[in-house]
Amino acid sequence: PKRNTSSPPSSSNKNRSSSSQGSSSSISPGLAEWVANQQSESSSPPQDTENETTDQTTDEAAVSFEPFSMEVDNTSDSSKRKSNKRREKQNARKELEEERNAKIGAIVDRLEDILEEKSGNVDDILAVVQELLQVPDSSSQSTSSGSSILRQLLSGKQRYDYRLAWVGSDDAICHVGTGLHKVPLARLQEVFMSCLGRNRLELREVIRILGPFPNVKNILQGTTKINAKNKDMEIVMDSMVDGTGKEILAGTEDNIRRVNLQIEFCDERAIVAVVPPEEGTSRSSPLEESGKHVLVFVKEDDLDEKLDALRVS
Image 1 (cartoon, one colour):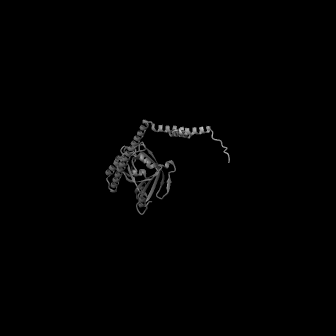
Image 2: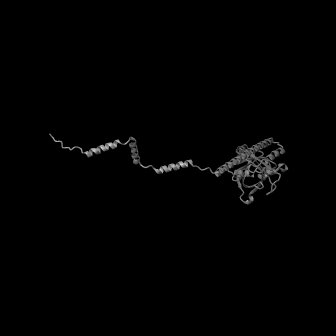
Image 3: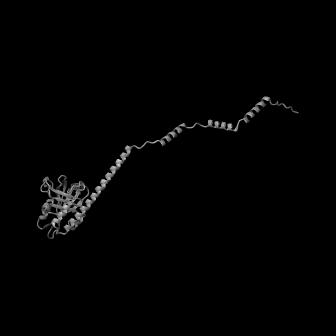
């Protein structure tokens, strides 16, 4: 039989084993859990202190504020007040302009009704013209002016046509026209004035020749100058187209014709002009001498149709 060669365990090993078992069994469950937590915290990475600082700063900024500046509020209120005043002035100006336009329209309609009667009384005509002279100018609210409106009509790009609705005398017609209607067998039919734009003005006169003859159309053209101080308009006529269609240029300064008119009223729908007594002066009473110096022009909406009817288109 084989001999057992293993040696028995030593007493020291026995004591070490029993010592280990005894110490293991002596730790309480709560203590073991605390040890485990400590080991877990020591093994986790450190927290980002920068993020904590940023979050803290953000939270502080979120709850901190500064009161609004009273200066900003005052500026805003002042701007609103200025805007409201500007709007009120615009609305008031618009209402006045609408009232003015309505009044002018009614007066011009009444004037044309009187003129269509053919036998209209001169005093009745002058009474209506006087109403036009009393309508204030839209720009300055001063009566019997209109030089600013006339300047707009002459200098703009749009064309405005007018018909001579009434004139106080034959001398007043000759002051602006050719005077060819005074020849034997000639009768003046119509006179048209057109604002061509860029300070150019055109005057057309249609003359009827008695007998089997066609009507004659003469065209005068010139450049306008306005003197706002005394309401004068100067027409420098430098071109003429006669009844045969031939254009005659002034050529020299001596052949240029200068016509002065005193503008007493001007609107897009009507113009009241007066022949001044002499160059550089004005009539204090435009309707003096039964209006013999007055020319009243009213707006012509379809000039071509009128010329076709007169057989001079």
